[in-house]
Amino acid sequence: MPTPLTADTIVTAPKVLLHDHLDGGLRPATLVDLAEQVGYRGLPTTVVPDLARWFAESAYSGSLERYLETFTHTTAVMQTRESLVRVASECVQDLAADGVVYAEVRFAPELHTERNLTLDEVVRAALDGVAAGTRVAARAGQQIRARLLLTAMRHAARSREIAELSIAFRDQEVAGFDIAGAEAGFPPTRHLDAFEYLRRENAHFTIHAGEAFGLPSIWEAIQWCGADRLGHGVRIVDDITVDRDGNATLGRLAAYVRDKRIPLEMAPTSNVQTGAATSIAEHPIGLLTALKFRVTVNTDNRLMSGCSMTSEMTALSEAFGYDWHTLQWFAVNAMKSAFLPFAERLILINDVIKPAYDRLRAG
Ligand SMILES: [Zn+2]
Image (cartoon, rainbow, N blue to C red):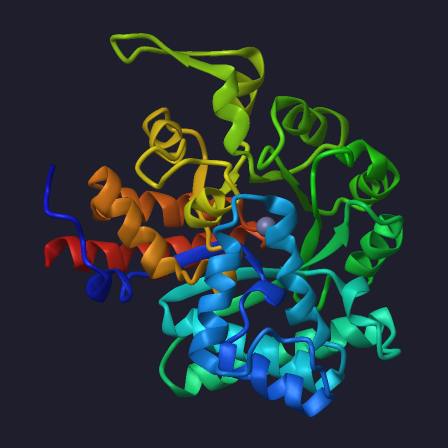
């Protein structure tokens, strides 16, 4: 196995992030600050390093349901325009500093209306924060294009409304739509009305599927709902058999996903934490990459997982010996799968990503 790449060079490589939750990426210090400002007393501790550790420990509980509980604290402090602007701005700054050149950051507007912001006001605040963060990053010499995905919660009944919101803001850096939340008992077909509406509007969406739950969830997301991408999609490996000689046979669903180049938004550390994979080294991303599925690498929740794009890429490089060629492949895969007009995707691939990896390979 070649020498693994190290974090100090990987951070300089252009990376593309399609699956990152705004309420899963707060700086611990900001969470403490905002809790103080808005009078939220529910944090387990206000000592910043202890709080960071508490999130990491909760994330390793092995249960998606308990993992999702940690979000009650982050969303609790994101109920005002000022806090949403700040969190979105810092998110973009942190991603830019991590070498991310294109990002789609998602969040659920319906979780931010406890203090009477309207859904429109919530989205406007997040967009203003994204724009502000992009300007701050540019002043620091870091170019990033960041857009939002609007998420509806799969256990709730507001998906059509949130889908309409994503269309209302489609020309203002809202790139698309998503549904998230605990999979078990809440199949994506509950939200068919929203997906059919989006298809009629020629809009893009991704669906969290095949994370905690198996193939039926993936099948429904693609064949009933028409998802452009799969949030995680890890369990697609259940439709692949590998014999003793390492030869893989794909079932019909896995073959469909690969043939149609349906992007898998994989987040290795997050998947290990929720029990969707046992370790990074045993994560299905190794097999799926070898089989040339449209694999993308993502952070999911940087606070809960204590991760970044650089740390995920570094861990993958250590586990699987990935070199610059594979890291470039991940970045190009993600860029090809972005909800961004084709011409703009090409510019990022040809003028930003490829020349940078050429330089890195040349050393
Ligand atoms: Zn997610």
